[in-house]
Length: 53
Image (spheres, rainbow, N blue to C red):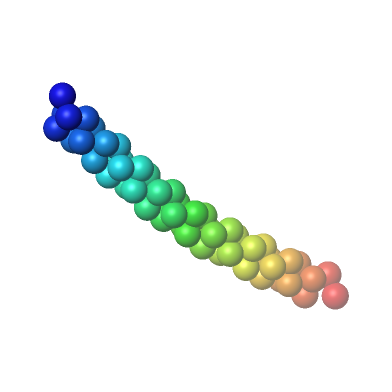
């Protein structure tokens, strides 16, 4: 009974570690995407402003 419990605990720990790593990567990617979007938006606004003025 005990070795099975140990294996189960190890498995859950590994899964949680993987999940945390995955979430961290997703957060990094979303931050990059948000930055790219904001820079694109700012450049578009500047372009529009140049056309208007």
